[in-house]
Amino acid sequence: MGSLLLLIGSLKPHEAALVGACFAALVGAVSTVLSGVLRDFLAKSWSDKRDHQESAKEVFRGYAEPLASATTALYWRLNEMVSGNGRASFLTAKEPRNEFDQYKLLSTYFRLAAVLGWLRALRRELSFLRAYGHRRIGELDAALDAFEKSLADGHEVEVLRLRGLQELWGIPLINDARAEERSAVAVEDRIERALHGKVATRAADLESAAQLELCRELADLIAEKSGCKTIQTVVLKETQARSICQIDIRQAWLYRDWQTAIGDMMIRETKASNRNFEVIGYGDFEEMLLAPTKTQYRSLSRIAALFHDVDLERKDLYDARPVALHKLLGATAALIVALADTRIGKNTVDATTAKRARLTHAGHAGIKPGTIRSWRTRWLPLVATIATRVPAKSPAHHPLQE
Image 1 (cartoon, rainbow, N blue to C red):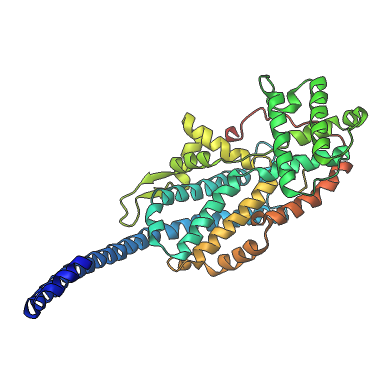
Image 2 (tube, rainbow, N blue to C red):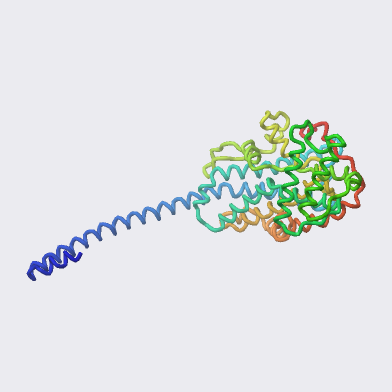
């Protein structure tokens, strides 16, 4: 630049003016070309984004209504089950079930499977929704994730087992939440190692001596984590049956890949203009129950395990599924609220359901981990007063064969 200025300074006035005019013309031409290119690029980018947003809106409209309908049906069924007024008796009805109880059980399976089907279909087209870029869509995506997590996450059960054993053996609770969770995981790992390589799949299947040995290992581990003295063997013997029940606490989780498999089982391609998939109806679901393939049977069995013979009318410290169903109710309510608050989906949820779901979402333990801990803590002091119980045996038949 300095050399150029020196060169221009050495020129005669008319020559310098000519060079300056040429330089200005060159800069103007380059500026005009660049501004045109940039304008065309930005205009096309804006146009593509707008078109993509409109396409995403159409995709969302196509799934919002059936997803809201399926979620509403599941919400009211779960709400009915956990109401505590005997409406969940069909889950524990004795065999043979009457026609109504059998319908309620199988339709409960269907309602959960249908929601998982619509979620799977939506996930397969969710890239369009994420590109939509609207804050409400992000909230809906978070609600979808929370729903799936409520079915797959069992950390509360690990802590529930740990606290139950602490109550039985008189070990102080661990105040630090992270330390408590690490201790709960350590207990889970120790149980898995004790059962590894054995025919037994549950602690209840071990010989009595092996059960006592496992109780000793866990008691020593928990006492160390809690900073207390070793538990006397006489205490472990007196509480052995109840401790084994607590170790084998009944649970049924639908892990995310299992949810995906259930969703794939429930959907089929459609020619509808605004979506590519639809969920099968109840009639097709019944046909599937009567004659499932091996793959379908695995998925159906996992759904059945969550509901079969779960007693929601009494507090069973050895069955974690009531906690899971309360969590599922809260997550279902949150999904309904997210749909209702989304501009495109707000008209898909009726006012009564939206109002009730907001109340559930605001105060239900299923979506507030801290509340779950409080709810769980209220149950645990009852452990010490429960009489010795014989560990429940596995059912001789599968619930799908009822």
